[in-house]
Length: 251
Ligand SMILES: C[S@@+](CC[C@H](N)C(=O)[O-])C[C@H]1O[C@@H](n2cnc3c(N)ncnc32)[C@H](O)[C@@H]1O
Image 1 (cartoon, rainbow, N blue to C red):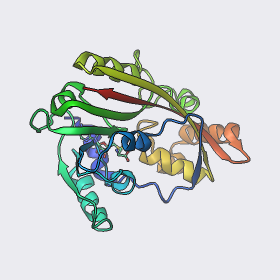
Image 2: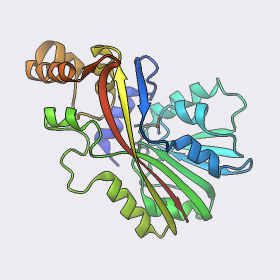
Image 3: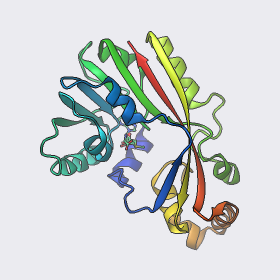
Image 4: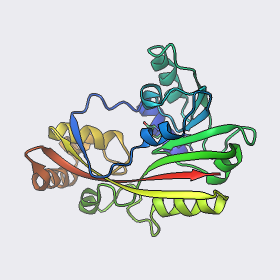
């Protein structure tokens, strides 16, 4: 169990970014939810791993037979069950479960999805039915790279092998027959400094980043943040280059 991560997600308690003002310009046409739609049938049994507060699975998942959505954070699952009340017709069950210690029988699910969360390829392989599909989107080492370089830290900053490569290799080694990899580049433009700050406080992009320190106690962090903002401010907003990856694999 990743105790530090769990504590952080318990404190956050949701994965809702609707209060942050930003626009997205997509360079790649690969889209996680469109991929899921391609493989979904009216009677599919779908498992969504690391579902957060259910914000995306409730609003963006296509109609299928049933969705089981899991997260290791009880607080996230509590939020998801509250959010579920706004989707009375969605056939979905939220369950507390660790992605690294999954408790499902073998050959159960038609589709397993995982967006921006840790996975264990072997456990996913085992719980998928024959010909079942895994669809995942991950955040790569070079995501927000200019920002990470400036702070000399951040998510996967010092990894010798990128997360995308690790996931790809693990999925191949687990025994999946067809594995398709897609690099995803997108530009996000944050309306104000406070919008970007809110993103950085909530997400693990820069590890241990505290907005309060930026503005009061920690002058070095404030200077680094201001330097990034001044060099990346454009007419559209403060630019953040996102580098993600998508994988579709068949058992
Ligand atoms: C970045 S959020 C993504 C949430 C959601 N998938 C989305 O795309 O909006 C990552 C989520 O994964 C969960 N998570 C992280 N490690 C996990 C693990 N080992 N087992 C289950 N959930 C985990 C966190 O609690 C958090 O809710």
